[in-house]
Image (cartoon, rainbow, N blue to C red):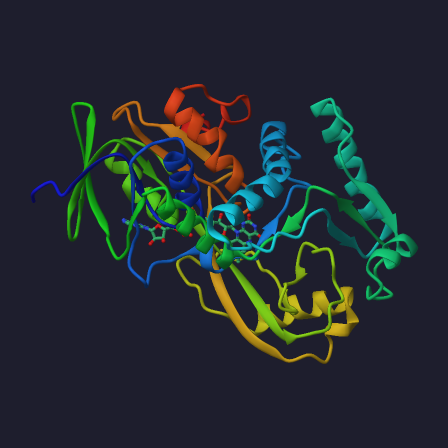
Length: 369
Ligand SMILES: Cc1cc2nc3c(=O)[nH]c(=O)nc-3n(C[C@H](O)[C@H](O)[C@H](O)COP(=O)(O)OP(=O)(O)OC[C@H]3O[C@@H](n4cnc5c(N)ncnc54)[C@H](O)[C@@H]3O)c2cc1C
């Protein structure tokens, strides 16, 4: 097949992770093409919950806590930048997310864990422990079973679809090219170039970034990268529009700018099956109603299942191939939360070689120990 396109960077996968990286590369001056799969591909980026979630991230891995906090801190500027470039409002609502507790013991434990993390990070971890009275002042509609919550100002939420739209438009404004409906079938390393074969065309670039979500496992093997990702299903319910009652998202209930309430989500090991089940949806709904009794009598207008892109330990993989220098993999479980750092410091690492301290341990080598 003849070479169609020769650019600085090819990004394989046009979900939130690929578009964040592609936008960052284009912003830094690269000529970039994004190749994205067919319409029936599994796409976590179109089925997620939209949280920018920092609290509790990295409790067992302080580097991940630092990386996530950096993303949370950068989100406001990132949303403004996307809006200025494209006119698209991603509906960022920050500061503040809540993790509700139904018993004092779990509330105390959650606070202690964040204190311990703060000590490890040598900061005062940004959170507030709220009792039911304080919480009711912030969120009057909580149910009688809720005894309190952990509030973290770095948490928030966005519209995932608006974020994808903004990133796509911003990328195109920087002369980036997005090629949809292309399935990459082979990657070859020739000298300093990677040659990428697809079912339709052939592309070459000095840098290839694998951001194909669950497709990264097969693609990684083509360039000597071990990417042991697996699907984990999450189911979500969406209500009719309601009066605004929830200013701050909580871990499994958020109200969007349009007034609909999203209720999430499950964690199911069912392989490549993104169906919904009544049993799981009922369990999720019951938990949300316990938090917010106002949800008891509302109509559900939509439900869906999405497949998370999970590594064995739940942390990201950021790695350049030793076998094929110039080929990178970027995959993670929190692509919405991490979008600003994927467009920023991660791209700097690829372009300038300086690995940010927070991500030095996120290679796949940790799985072979
Ligand atoms: C139910 C649920 C709730 C979630 N909630 C949150 C949340 O609140 N906050 C948060 O931060 N994260 C959340 N996530 C996680 C987040 O959605 C993912 O981290 C993110 O979407 C992963 O994006 P991605 O671009 O890596 O993968 P995907 O969105 O899956 O995109 C991969 C792309 O690669 C393409 N592709 C695959 N193979 C090939 C190939 N061979 N050739 C060309 N293209 C290919 C596909 O077409 C696809 O478009 C949630 C996920 C789920 C499922």
